[in-house]
Image (tube, rainbow, N blue to C red; front, side):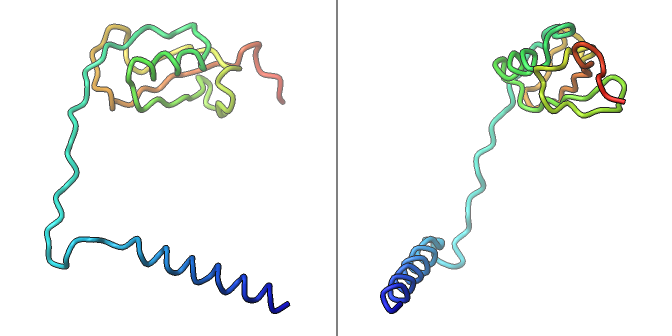
Length: 117
C-alpha cells in the first residue's frame, strides 16, 4: 500500500513539474507578434456531380479546397458514410474560380435509394 502511495505521489509531482514548465518563456510586457497570414490560393472548381461523395471529397481536398460540407438533396438525412452517397448538386459551378478556403456544399443522394421508413 505504501509503495502504491509513493508511486502515485511521484507521478503526481512529475505531472505538476511538466505542466508548470510549459509556460511562456517571454518576459511580461513583451509584445507578442501575430502569426503570419497566408494568402489563399485560387482554385478552379471541378464538376463532381454524379461522382461518389467520398471520391468527390477526396478530389476536392487533393486540389486544395479546405471547407467541404456534405448535405442531402432531400434534407431528411445526414451523410455519415460518404461512400454510400452520390453527389447530385454542387454549390459552385464547374469552372468557377474560388479561394481555397471557400465553403463548398455538395448535395448528395443515397446510393440505392432510402432503406428506412
